[in-house]
Image 1 (cartoon, rainbow, N blue to C red):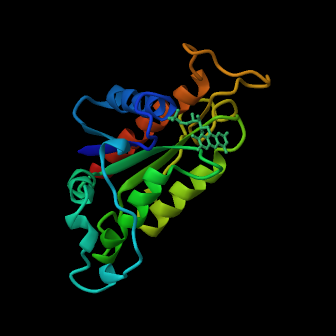
Image 2 (image 1 turned 90 degrees about the vertical axis):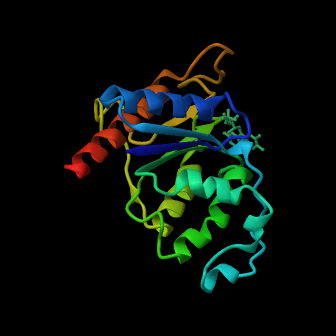
Image 3 (image 1 turned 180 degrees about the vertical axis):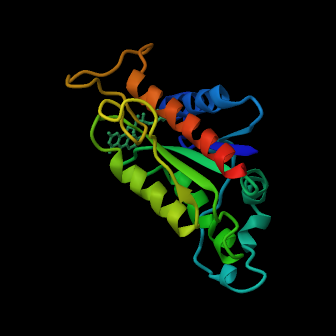
Length: 207
Ligand SMILES: Cc1cc2nc3c(=O)[nH]c(=O)nc-3n(C[C@H](O)[C@H](O)[C@H](O)COP(=O)(O)O)c2cc1C
């Protein structure tokens, strides 16, 4: 089974990547047999949707796909059993790179929901401790509109561990930021546990 994970930040090795790597660790703690398909969104050139609506009519293709990397992304993403996206908080919303991909994924919906029933897990990286929820909402809307099945974390202590992995550069309860080598342990733990849950759900559904 194939699990695709997207680092949605233009920065390849920062907080979104931290969440994704933790999720991968969680997946691999369940089984080494999953095909892990990690994508860096910044590796792909995605032209903005121009609203031409050509995708509404058969064969529901996007004419812009001749000029950019969306076909490559389509090949990588479609056919996944689960999709996990980590998005950075940019002004309370997700990165423009991810928004480009989301808008250009409209043909996948128009071709009768090619992402239907894919398990989807949202994650966010934010500067300030409070503020990642808007990013998560954007990701959830994308998943809902594409017919995916959205899951949150249910591993770990239900009182002490949250359901949505949101990592922050700001320390808990302090007007202070993490040092260069410091990691948000709780955010990483929730990401790992969410990866584990996604993997376990896939195995459950396969039975
Ligand atoms: C254009 C821009 C806008 C941002 N807006 C916010 C914001 O509104 N709130 C916030 O807490 N952090 C904001 N940040 C900080 C990022 O969310 C934070 O650095 C996050 O860790 C980025 O993910 P990355 O490390 O994977 O790149 C912003 C960063 C950029 C570059």
